Length: 401
Ligand code: CTP
Figure 1 (cartoon, helix red, strand yellow):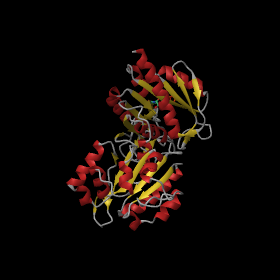
Figure 2 (figure 1 turned 30 degrees about the horizontal axis):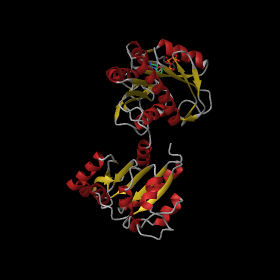
Figure 3 (figure 1 turned 135 degrees about the vertical axis):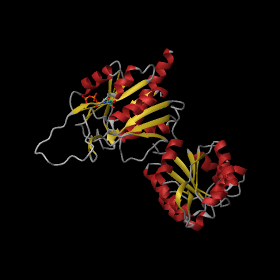
Figure 4 (figure 1 turned 135 degrees about the horizontal axis):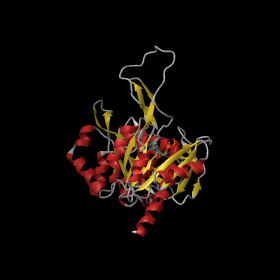
């Protein structure tokens, strides 16, 4: 997503300035072009040479330099950038932007540009809590700047509190969000993800190989595109990409959570790998190794997507089909039987598809039965491809109204 995107990174003088080096690395790794502007105080914490080496670009530090070094930098940088990021942002730069002060290259450049701008405050907790700083942050938000929340934790001044720079991967995610068109703004999407666990006794359960990666990628992509996302997730080890998450364990719990929430959503995407069966009765105490053989009796779990399909109204319902044989025929049958609008099919036997990988090889099938096979791609790309098809269906159903 960040391939060839042009980012101007402003670095100001706080101890977290050293983390800006990691941010440049992360952005370059994602294919972005980065130009760094440093304030005089930032240079006390980290050298321009570090930033120049990592960004592979000249670093801009002073307003007044011979024109052969950089020509009207505050204007050319504004033209160059797809987005501006200030990380770390001190109370001082926040105050200057809020008050319209341009007394150095960074503050002047920010004033001379109208591009999407992300501000990542990092400072001592008491400075951050200062009402003037809070007022200034509010003002920036009102003016359209995106201001990230500082994180709670240990601060350089040996206190604990809120004021840390957000994690680099979270800043990168926010930059991707900043640069993504908000074509799902105003859409409520419910997404399920991950496996379910069906307890046999207090220490054992039946589950499957789902990692949740596909569903979480869908949630992240939908959030980036401006959707209001609710994620219902079985147990996973993944970082949560959205604000609204409902964590469940069993298929029954997932069924209840979906039934409680799907009516508010316009789009429901069921990427979870729900266990079809659960033990008829879970033992309340640990099952002892007493007999040579034991049998497990299993009963059907509720079919969540089928239940949604029965009462879905105008909502768009997207399901998944993971198969080891007869991919298209099985998927088409599931779509019909469960009243879905789209089904995303993948073949578990295919290289780079299915559980636990970061890639997927999917075929998207619609109600007419038309199958669109897509090449191997990352799960984030697959998520966007699925959302693109959902968008087309939304447009079609809007013209039908
Ligand atoms: N699904 C569901 N509730 C279940 C089982 C499946 O909501 N109890 C949903 C999955 O989230 C997926 C779709 O149904 O979107 C298809 O799941 P899949 O496991 O491929 O199909 P099943 O209907 O369970 O059929 P089978 O296991 O026989 O292939």
